[in-house]
Length: 189
Length: 263
Image (cartoon, rainbow over all chains, first blue to last red; front, side):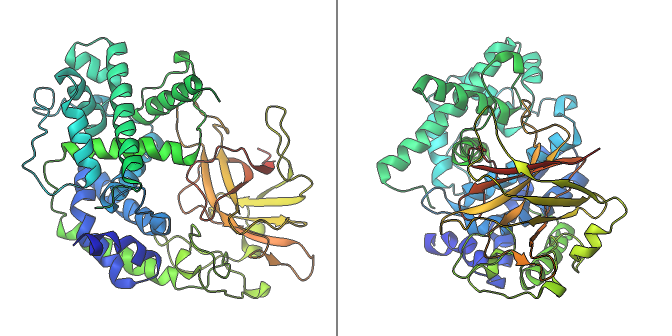
């Protein structure tokens, strides 16, 4: 199973037409979820999905399974494009209401879709953080809200929000890097 | 670089990625390396995936549109690519054909278009003769007192905003090592360094001396610029040396030439 999923992008890079479609099958749901969550409306999400998959196919030659799993790589490409789109449009989701339940629960339960190794590592690291830190990270990274909006919604000082977001992200980065160093390779799923 | 300074720069990158960077916070938003930025992006993706309940189901209409894009992408990839080197891998655009050498006659030189756009190429002459075409000459790219890695490269760049295409001409280009390529960057009005973290530099593709076409009339090396995404208000073009396949974000440490368009 891992062997098939780890070679989809490599096969795209090699010019295998069927792999391009397999990419849609394998990552379509994930990319759609990301696009819906980090776009302003469904129309923009639909446009974003097109751009994301073009980026994924074009970047396939750069995919290195020793650095990341395919799922994490695709999620990274998708988030990069979605953030770029928002910046190019010059808008920030400050108008968005806090997503229902997002400020209350962080839901890092294990009973969910099969996760890649990076997500597992991140979940464990997040579980070691305070509820407050987890909440800020979820609102910032997962929901893409601005630090100002998070501060207003949570009542936390802006500086605290920034610190939680920055340190949380750095902590996960260090955990992933440590895991890579320990394994001698990346987290290919 | 000291560990403290390196940590500080990583923190600034984290702020930039999350959109919380403010110039008055201090630090420098200049990226360390593409790999450093990617490591932070990967961490953010991992957090995102950790919170993800279950992937959604893509609407059928979106899927159909993607399948059309996939078909167009595969057709585009099957076209003769301009920037191809035998045995090269990871070329940013047209990378499927990187393992095969494709000879393209100078008289039929095409600029490969992104799969999302209409099919068909745009000749170099068309770009140069476009009503809105603007040209600028290359000059050695020094930065903060440090000279370029490769000096003395001359030539010009021509850009058409309407067609979103450009062409570079060089008197010559020094050959690079097997694990190096030239990469051209399109800089918009925000300039080379944008502390807000917005994308002020867009890659226009990778190339090498061997894959550039020699104009039989002028003897100049000719390389097309195909950004693949929309460029707004191109203001300058810059060339760096990068690893094969190019990079999303250059630290600009290996500079070659820069050219500023006249407004």
